[in-house]
Each structure stands twice: as C-alpha cells, then as structure tokens.
Amino acid sequence: MRQDASPRQGQRDTASVTLQDIAAHAGVSRSTVSLVLRESPLVAERTRLKVQRSIKALGYVYNRGAAALRGSRTSTLGVVVYDIANPFFGAMVAGIDAALNREGYVSFLANSEDSPARQQRFLERMREHRVDGILLCPAEGTDPTLIDTLDGWGMPCVQVLRHVGEPPFDYAGADFHQGVCQAMDHLVALGHRRIAFLGGHSEHSATRERWQGYRESLERHRLTYQRLLRSTVTRRDGVAMIQQLMAESPAPSAVVCHNDLVAFGAMLGLKHLGRVPGVDCAVIGTDDVEEATLGDPALTSVATHPHAIGEEAARLALRRIATPEGAREQVVLAPRLQVRDSCGATRPPSGATELNPAAGEHA
Image (cartoon, rainbow, N blue to C red; front, side, top):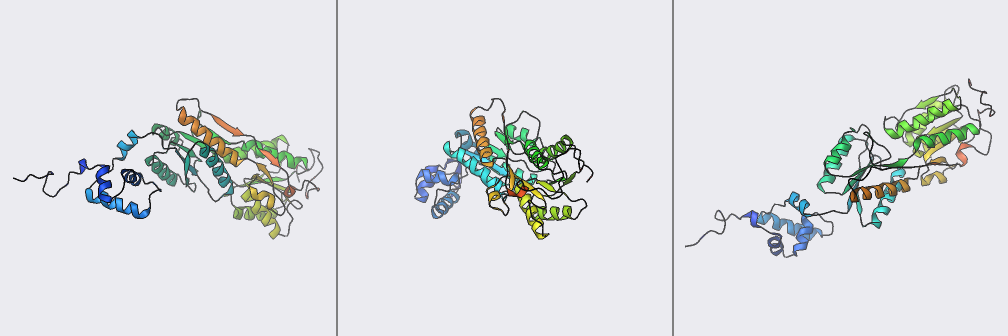
C-alpha cells in the first residue's frame, strides 16, 4: 500500500523545505541560496533568477524575522539627507564613507527631498534591511517624536546638521550661528552698514541658528538696516533675491547667504544687472564648497567642514552602536571665514561708510 509523502497527494510540505533542498534543486551551493535570500548584490542575475525559480517551485517562505534574530550586526548604516544635489552633501557623504570604510562598514544613501513622508518610507525600508544605525538630516516638518520612534525600534540615530526633539540626543554639525556672526563682523569691519541675509524658508534648527546670528549681529553693531529674505536655497533663488534687493532704495551694500549655492546665484544676478560682485555689492556664502575657489570672483565663504562633519557623525554612530546606553553626545565644529575676492576685502565697498558705529544708521 502506497503512502503519501505529504499531507495531500502532490502537495509539498513547505515547512520542511531547507536551504539545502533549494540549493540541490537549483544546482548551486547553499551559501548562494543564502545570498539570494538576503538580496546580496554579489550574486549574478542569471543565478539569482534560477534560485528564485527553485524557491517558488518548492514553495519555500523566507522567515526574515527569524533570520534577524539569528543574525548579528550587518555592518551597514543608513544615511538620509534632504538635498543630494547640493555639493555640501557630496563632501559630507564622502566623510561618512571614509570613516565607515576604516571600520568595515558601508552606507545606504537616501534623499528625502525634505519630505517627511518620503523620509519615513526610507527609514522603514532601512529597518527592514536591518541597518545597525541611522545618520539622519531631518526633513523640514519632521515630527520630533520620530527620534523616540527610532529608539523604540532599537535603531541608534545620529542627527546631522539639523536636529529635532528635546536633548539629550546624538548630533553632529557646525556652529551656523557663529559662522553668520563671523561673516557679519567681517563686513562691518570693511565699513558696510546695509547688510542683507539671503535664503532659508523653513523653520528647522539650521535656519533658525543662521537667522539668530544675523539678528544678533545687527543689534551688536547697532545697525538699523535689516533685510532677511526667505527662499529655498538654490542658485535660482539667489539670482531672484539679489535682483529684488538691488531694485530697492536703499539697496544693500553686502549680503550674507544661507549657503554657497545662494551666493553663486547672487553673484550671477549682480552680473546680469551689470554690477560687479565685491565692488558694487559684497557677497559671502556659507559652507565653502570646492567650487567657491573657482568662481569669478572667488567666493568668500564660511567654511563649515562638511567632510569632517560626515566623519564625526559616522564615528559617533559607531560609538553609539557599540555602547547603546552610553551618554548622548553632540559634536559641533567651529566655522572659519575664508576671505576671497567676492567680499571686496581689498577695495573700499560701494555704499559703505566710515567705520564710525554711529554713521550711516539711517542710510
């Protein structure tokens, strides 16, 4: 009398299917099957398809949760930024990868485009892939409870450049407040009394710190001219804002920009108006990206050290992974003003007055 080898005739007991069964069916090694199940890029596409056909034929279901429990660290970090097109982030990610590579780690990079919903999808996907931690530049409008959510997932998070939630939290960034103060002090020392600030439209921490530095500098130097224009931080907006300002009366004699992209746009806008950056209006950027030295004129910029920020953020994340209960850390790098031609430091500025603090306040 013949007995069925499975609960029903012709139906396989899928619960008993092993990786070795799949390997034998596909004619590959067990380790290759394991790599396919973990979606490793090391497997050739032809081999991957063959293994996947065997998995389907045998009715195997991969228990990802059990695999995660069996596994340990994945030596991967998720990195979420909000504007990958900005060269600042290229330098920062290079710093992250340099620090991770020394420890045998790799990163998964995602661009949130400043969308909390898009950011959430990336974070959930990274959780599924079991990254050991997250480096997060929070999107505009991020709910501060997100940091608690990540903590509840058991996923270490280091915030970078921007921060949300109440301290203590792990953070790596630059002192944007001090950077704007350095730029303002330099322009006042050159004799400028009408200094505008260009860029930034969102109420996140990095923008607030810049605006605070601008307003405090006006008060400290007893300057009554105040023009703070909000916008997205692109070249296009830099062009539009400087053209708007130069049509006003009085026009500014100098501008400090949210980042170098806005500053590049401001210099281009001045040229479109027949004005000379550094002569008719001084321009200072923020970040000191590589392109700053190549402009015409070369851009004076506040160096915020993106490569070093990336390295510090990665090292901080690795320390947090190693000691989950350790004290939270904040690494804030000091900025440095890099003086070049765009601020007109070597010639008397147009529209400026003598260095008498009381002079020209109502110009």
